[in-house]
Length: 616
Image (cartoon, rainbow, N blue to C red):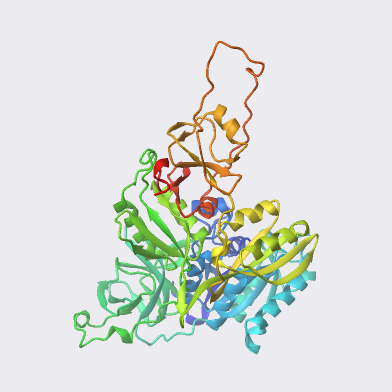
């Protein structure tokens, strides 16, 4: 069904991590009648990936649509973590407005500011939703004042700052315009009405030549690659000829084999899609994010550059923030390589990384002088860890190197990326946390008491100073601290920053770790391995309590003799080993170490495994 332009609304749901945007989309889908009354529906239905469900976060942007009265509201659920800002950049090109979701207790946090700034630069209209007003520590009115301050701080115009406000309890599917209406509210109708009233319909040209900017990609086993985007002008029909206009402006003709629009979570076939609506296009295999699809009246002209200028139809490509960090990916060369993974060769790893670059515009791929090593550049360690987790679940084996910061030079001055760290910590750890960040060249910006024994600290710190800091932060705050980051641009190089304070406990031989040896070694530091775990020479089995590496023998067994001793029958007591996760493993790495990643195991190792080769 084709909807009139005036009845279409394209809206992005934007918020910080865990402020409830995916839960809110759940409520909108259910109350719009998307699901049958007897249909079993999972919570956070938009978080479809296994990693998203496990972590409770949104990693990739997703499209859906709800039908409310006689309106069609296309909704895009965007990621809330700053490392996935590239997803936000391109998705905002598809919408005409946004719902800014803010937690009634935590208030605006870094990703709130990041996405709001991008939305305001595009001139989008914003509906503010203060969510979780049922929390015991909710301070809805104070948070609303913080939102106004944020708009003013970002240079909002008089028109932009006159935004409508809706209060909500997304978990209960309720929205209301005044706090005192909470008891009487039963639905999200107030939010539906504000979206229709305040968000404009698409400002497009129905009579213009067909143009469609590709903002997302999908895949169908039957139709191949799917290109997703909003039609900016004209209309697109099944069976007509169109052309892909890439970054270099070259036009490649193809036939539109299938068209779909969104109804709820389903893609519904359509013979024709008019401008303003979000469409899914099948029939083109070599399209990438940011390309333009344009209708071609005479396909013979596509091949003749002098008679057809594709640059006149090319839409502006989304501008993506440049990467600030790089990680070296390499083939797994440890003695245990190939035992757990299905894809272990350099060709397989390269193909998978190149495939990721087609759909993730925030990442960059670079070859090295070795066929077994590749460089992946992105926005942060968490982004790299998610990609590594996806690949290991697909059966890949590989190794990751220490993250390296990408510097740049301006007017002969070496510049480095900076981050604004916003920390919500218990009062007892305030002094320790402040000192921890200042040692890493952090500059204190603000300290504010938040009540209930908590303090908010704002620090501007070099990106390289954050490597390995998050795990120490969680330890010092006893797991109660909140750690959020926002890009703060580039500043002149801040000088040397101390890296990891502790050395490594390194295995000096191959075999199996034995409890008898581990009992003595645990006094030297924190162990990463347990009894009967396979080890090899050069494998890091723990963190040394001192700052130097220590080569040890974890395979030593008790000598069997015919002498009895008083402690012969003493039970061996081992502390639980520290499990190596992808994020903590990447953070912990030193320059001469690698993180070995397999579908079943994570191991830290030295780049040069042999003990007698270390000095070389």
